[in-house]
Length: 217
Image (cartoon, rainbow, N blue to C red):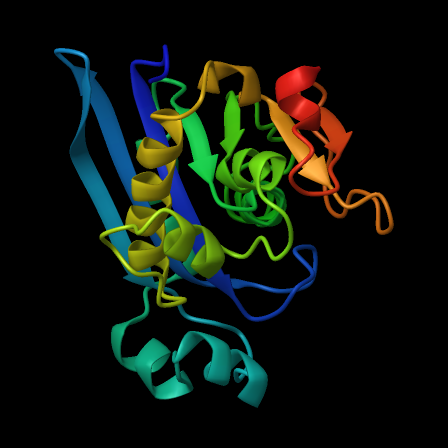
């Protein structure tokens, strides 16, 4: 499916939309390693994080995470950052659905709690860009799960969304001529441009939905 020895699938739930101002409140991460040509899960991290401020009603509605849950089960942001960095050792391919959102939060997360000059240099794969290349609007994860009949349903909880994302990726790989073409490419809506950070080794391409701009490039 991919040439990378290891892939790290991840998903964040957050206190809001702005990575430079908001915090991660849940991390789901699954590290997979290719063994005999098949990716096998070798590590997983599923954790709530303490936040500096109460959650808004909208975030509670979307994530089903409450302030009480964070106080009861959450760990310090710095500890969670160190744990995630451990999973990034060995330079795995970073994989997520709508990865631009998560990468931007990861960038500020690591700079805030580990190294203020940190640069993300890993190869990346945005599963949403693959789906958007092949299908018309809407392009949310739940539509991809429905289209490909993923065995794991997304719930807006991080670890479930990761497993659903990988299931969708595996099924898209079966119909794609070359999934590696999507590595280090992020699609964006031309009307709104690219939100968040830009990585120098990543190509950003406008996508309209179902027109296979990346595949044809």
